[in-house]
Length: 88
Image (cartoon, rainbow, N blue to C red; front, side):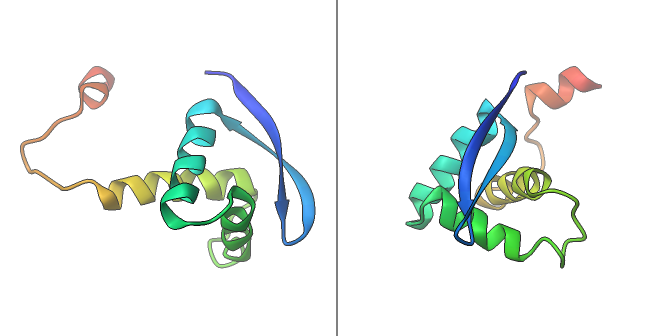
């Protein structure tokens, strides 16, 4: 999966992030759901980078997207994901 570089404004400063297309799409969807711009969401995530001991904003975004959708997904004990099965 190829990564795309896009510019976002974080705390009033333009910065570049390299993310896979699926993460850019997910970031846009989360921003819309939460009533924020992508830049505003990235600014909030950047403010938490030190607390998460992260090296890059891209990494923080990837983890946040995964945790966001994981929290939004109801858990079923017997539910399995085809991708998880394929990885076994």
